[in-house]
Image (cartoon, one colour):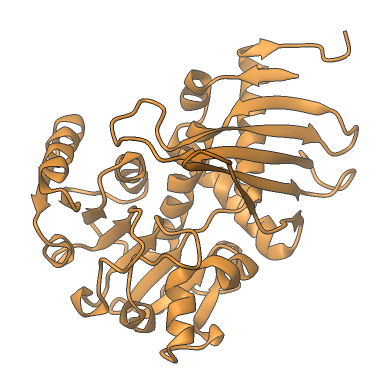
Length: 332
């Protein structure tokens, strides 16, 4: 078994390379070539934290190249924004489906961050207008930064608009992004100001209640909803859902935890038939990502274990080729 640390995950699987990995993972998900139990959360007694448990399998032993199964364990703790540990600490355990033996233990926070932004990049590649160049980032944490790189990997971004609840932090984030990318990046006091000129919008917040309203959206925009991952949280309102061509990563997960969609269904704004398709159905050509230039498209990202397994398998293969990480014999 190979132990692969954060530094090697970052080096081996940059977001641009991960987009194609996510394409195949989501096609397999929509094809049904996966096992995806709904994620479970366990509170940690006496602490402001919880453990997320995401088991799953990808491919069929003997029939799929690289068939694997495994589990992601993530500890989610409330920490200050500048804490070096971040809010997610964890690992992915990857097993070979044919022999049932462990292949790797891979640092999970960086793997999750990369695959999440790569999945948004995949959705953007297939749903945003080809001439989309202006990006709005709602939020200023790690996923906000990751999504800048992800969007730049699939569209010729030339300007970035930013909003965050703390304007000083949002402004510092914009300055850091400008310095890193060489692009114009401007922070705004209100979210509707940040999205007013955007072609692509990525919401990456911890918001419990909507911070972006449907009335602020413009025709032709594409939105990636990334931050909210439980049914009681939502980053956009029901009007935004109603106005959009709404695509999800995995229908069962969306119907269990996509707060924006569930709110819109509960208040009668839409029905579950509002889901235009899964991102894997678009990637395989079964469903159109965008039907016209004026349409507002929206991708709801919740994340599924198939994404973690596919990214983990790619990292393991690359680590094997480079002979990096630490090889251990569990049976010695």
